[in-house]
Image (cartoon, rainbow, N blue to C red; front, side, top):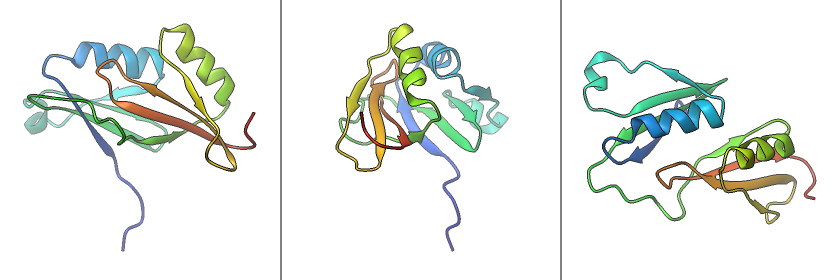
Length: 122
């Protein structure tokens, strides 16, 4: 039986690790976690915040997906959105999901990210 999502893997172009670290650690406030040595040779990097694990893997010919994305729950969504915007990230609010406040953004290589918090829109 499935009990939880262990991690989400997003792709990135070769050589993007430093930009990803700046964003996922410096902007989102996640911690980088070490990849096992057998996987580290492939490139990419892994990040964690609470129970959330994001793996960024290198993909030759990378093109960011237009629609696919992880939905990441946050606390204090207004302050979080302001933090991202102050660091140059695009914040696009969306009120289409009843019972949630949410916005979309992108990481430095174009991966779409959704941030949401239960609550009333607006």
